[in-house]
Amino acid sequence: MSRCEGVWALRMVKTMLKVDNLNVAFNGFDVITDLSFEVKEGEVLVILGPNGAGKTTLLRALLGLIPYRGNVVWATEDISYLPPQELWERRGLPPLSIEEFFRFKAVSMERILNIFQRVGLDPSLLKRGYGALSTGQFQRMIIGWALVDDPSVLLFDEPTSGIDIGGQETIYSLLHSFWKERNLTILLVTHDLNVVWEHAETVLCMNREKLCYGNPHKVLTPEELEKIYGAGIKHYEHTHR
Amino acid sequence: MDFLPALIMSAFIGGVAGYLGSLMLSKRMALVGGPLGHLSLPGIALALIYGFDVSLGAFLFIVVGIIFIWLVEVRTKLPMEAITALVFASGVATSFVFLPEDKTVPALIGDISQITPDIVVMVIVLSSAIFFVTKRIYSKMILVSISEDLARVEGIDTKKFNFIYLACIALVISLGVRIVGGLMTAAIVAIPACTSKNLSKTLTQYAYGGLVLGSLGCILGIAAAEVTGVSAGSAIIMANTAIFLVSLVLKRAT
Image (cartoon, rainbow over the protein chains, first blue to last red):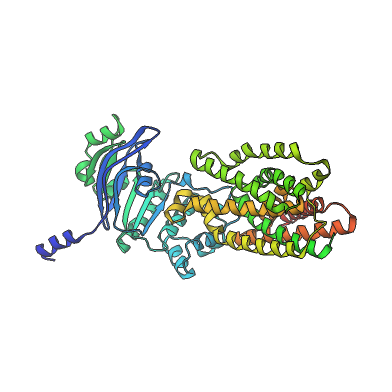
């Protein structure tokens, strides 16, 4: 590609999400203040911040699930959302097979089998009860559920909470392969700095307000990390990308 | 008792109550049928005094109660079950202020001694309509139980669906008071659903199990009432309980 073509290609990348002066308050208490950023098509944005920083609230506001002030403009309605595992009801449900859970999306059996294979689950699990999967299997299953109808955007909140280190790496590798293959736009909430170094093109650090925003290799300095998480945090960027 | 009309009417009411009850149980609302039945008692009392249809009387009072519950739930986010508990006792108290003594038993445990063909047709039409509406919202309501946020992102209007769901409950309880009275309506929604849960592995088996077992309980109950002369409402509940006990044995055996 010539330099000129490259410039045109850059200019033609669609903005999938534009957020201007987003403010969210609960009971008069400001949870998010004056947040502005945008996400391009095919971009991986990692949202980083300590507990109580407003990360989950941000995703819920972006999806219109809670009231907010400011502007949130999506270029698509083709959005999938995976709430954090602890907000999924897994016990106390009626008998529900995994196949029936996928059928809620009205997709063909062929697509279900295909996505099952892609997320590395045995098709025999389709007959298994919804509450009978292990944590790792459940996480793969819900990733498959989110992607089975081919969304343009995936919002994923704490995808690896409660999963061991090996399982975490598998989940992120899986997301990475779908991102490359389908030109997915991904907004990912995590605490895991390794994920930022290895998978994010852009990072948004927040603690009720924007603290840093941009290429993680440029903006995530030790000083910035200290500002986000407080003194005492030590993290060394991996260099084997 | 006119055996065949009573049997047909009860089978339809029991079936749709069991089907909707399976959804109510999955939303931990199976017991709500009880308070709503109690809430209907003033309506049943008025219907018995002034000679109009008991389901109509029950429905009017339940609708007022449900609209109140729905508005409070939307505004406060208190659990629906807790709000229901707030309103039902007033229904019982009010009904006993003006319910004549000779009407107390029919109001409390039901009366199927005088059933006209018009009533049977009305029950068949209403039960079928409630079944098809419930079938349309069933999987969406289960997704709401899994995660309300997930359901809303999938385009489900949770407020609208909750309202339809509550309207179906109001209608089923209004029909249910015909056969088991205002006192025992929780049983015809809760027991078949519990039995079905014991015997099912998939959602389809569970939902249709509620329908079949609810119907079966009513058929056996009406037959037992015809043979023994006990009240139909009591016989239906005992038949449902007997089927539940059998399911416990079957569950243990599998």
